[in-house]
Length: 193
Ligand SMILES: C[S@@+](CC[C@H](N)C(=O)[O-])C[C@H]1O[C@@H](n2cnc3c(N)ncnc32)[C@H](O)[C@@H]1O
Image 1: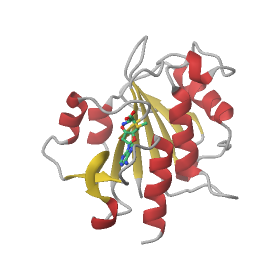
Image 2: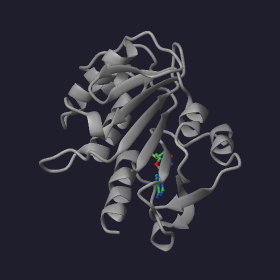
Image 3: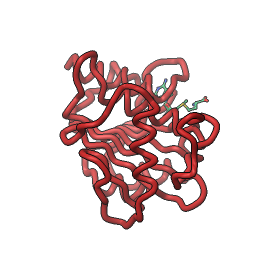
């Protein structure tokens, strides 16, 4: 099943934010919430065969990872506010390196990028402007797609991705896109296989 790992460098790692001001009070969690929407929402259904990890690295206590498992999701709605409420609930939990369930299909842990990638052994596809054209590589439903949220990955994060494992660097076109739009395009490529 396709897995998406999205890194939010400044996204708060506690629940001290307002659902009424997601862009201003969260370190741009709103960008990652739109990624969740793109990964799971079909017109009248939810994709059950997708996994999403939001890796949060902002203040006050990074890292936190909120994991959405399509197969188990029950209370996911298309609006950012209700998904934001699920993340807020997750960030109110005490966290450990093992995942804690916070709602059906939603889990939180104190894992960072390296741990999340270590738990997902598929081939890595690093989505990046300037990579190999997506139409010239054979994507697979078992790939693990990694991308930046509001900001690009750092060179340290790129080193984690390229650490001794098969990794493709793939571009979705010449223009720099929003992260959620990248997910829509990747899933469309996979749907068409
Ligand atoms: C909003 S962009 C990050 C900032 C953006 N690179 C900029 O110039 O401001 C979010 C992420 O989407 C992915 N991305 C954006 N455009 C892409 C493209 N054309 N092909 C592949 N990935 C892309 C990259 O992982 C990027 O870090």
